Every structure is written in C-alpha cells, then in structure tokens.
Length: 336
Image 1: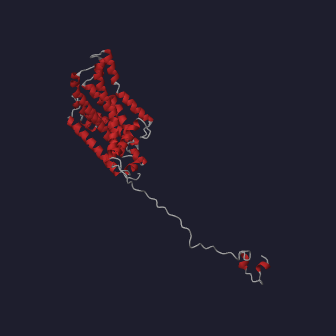
Image 2: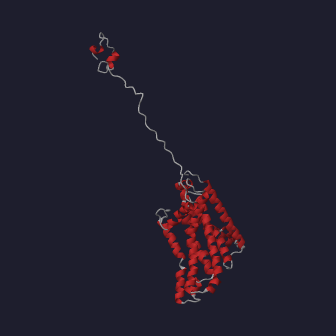
Image 3: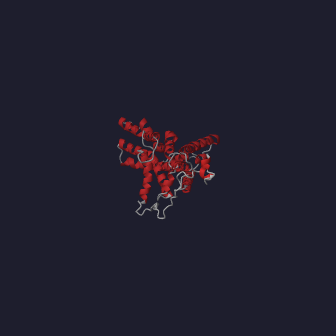
C-alpha cells in the first residue's frame, strides 16, 4: 500500500483505505421496505365432510364379497389370485366332478348292478365318500383348496395395510368379518357342495329314475348335504382364524394343513398304540366323518359316541370364530 493511499497528511485513515473508501460508494443508500408492501393470499385447505347420501349397507358388504369371489374368475378390479392358485382351484373342481362321467358311462353301457354302479352309483357309502371320503378328497383336495383360499384372506390386509382403508370407510368390523367369512364359505361350498349336488342330480337324470327313487334317496342325500355344509363351515372357521393372527399367507395355509393332517396322524398313532378312538375327537376331519356316518346311517368306525364328535365340532368352530372376531376387533385403522 503506497503512502498516497495511506494519506498520512491527507486525512484518510487506514480503515478507509483498506475497505475501499473513495471508490465510488459515497452516495450508496440502503433500500428500506415500503410500509405498504403487497401481501399474499393464504388458502385454507381441509377435508370437506360428505353431505350426500351413503350407499346402503348391503352394497358396501357386497363390494367386499365381490372383491374376493369374483377374483377367482377374473383379477380385473378384484382380488389378485396367483394364476397357479386359480389353476389348482380349477383342477380340484374338475376332479370333484369325476363321478359324473362314470355315471354316464354306467348308464350308457347298461351296467345295472355292475362294477360302475357299485363304484359310482347312488348309495349311502358313495354319497358319504363324495363329501367325506378320505382319499383323495379329504387327504388332498379339500384341505389344499381351503389353504389356498384362506391363506391371504385377512393376513394380506394386515400386511399391506388394507384394513386401514376398510375401517376408514363406513364399514363395521362385524360386516368386514362376515363378508370375509361368507366369501370363503361360498368358494368352498361351490366346489364341495355343488359337486355333491351335481353328482346326485346327474345320477337321477342319467338313470331316468322316477319319483319313487327320488323319495327313497332324498333323506340320505340331505344328510350328506348337511355333512358337506358342516365341513365348509368348520374349515372356513379354522382357516380364517389362522389368517387373522399373522401377516403371512403362508402361515395360515401351512398352519391349516398342519392342524388337519397333524391331528389325524396323532390320533391314528394313539389308536394303534392304545387301541382307543377318543383322540379322534381332536381331529376336525374325523369329527366330521363321524357325524357324516351318523347322518347317512352308515356303521361307525369309531368307538366313542357321535355326541362327543358333535360337541368337539361345536367347540372348534366357537373357538375359531371367537379368535377371528377378537383379532379383527383389535386391528387398528392405521397400518400395522
């Protein structure tokens, strides 16, 4: 810095020389905000309550029912079932109808009292086997069908937070639970009960039986129908109860199969070891089979009274429904 800039005799201080005094900013002035500045507009944004008329209760419930049942046939706008799940349901449904072609073949060949008539004709044992026969129906078909249907029925709602959407709408937990239950029961009933009804009516049509035959076989047909409805209710209750306690669809499916097969296996081992059938009262399938034998007038394979099996079924269904309702009641509106 030169002596001219310092200006010891000119009256310019070092601070003024260092920070640019005299470089053209002598007339600089501060800009002060005007007192009448233009003000912005604040918009009030909030949710407006719905002042219109809500749809009837049955319409809201039907939307839940349609979402699950129609999803079996089409995934557009409904529940997305995996293609392999749909294929498995179709295979089980077609397999449940296999006695119908055998009945047609029997009537075509005129096999009156022959092999086909004994194997697939209408009698107490065949009607019982159509619903409660162990192989292949209750060993493979019905348990697998129930497992794939109930697997994600409630657990998917818990996992993806869909329950928050349901309960933020005017849908009560009772309606939610009832429609889930009805959806599963209708799908299972369509395969199990409908195939049973189709088998019975096909036998009458193919054989060209009259009213006397219908009057003779109708009581045992209704007994088998009641046993089929009891099977649908029991499997639906147990399956949905398991689906409500976990966020994994595989837990519900594997848990259901474990209960059906595990109780059957343990009861069989205890029977072989101790020569008693009382442990079969803990097996859902065996309780249903025992009750079905009673309804169709078939000699029982079990030593214990049928009343024990019926009471056991009532306890199983009551406990499962209680667990289902308690779990759905505890669901929060927010995502878990």
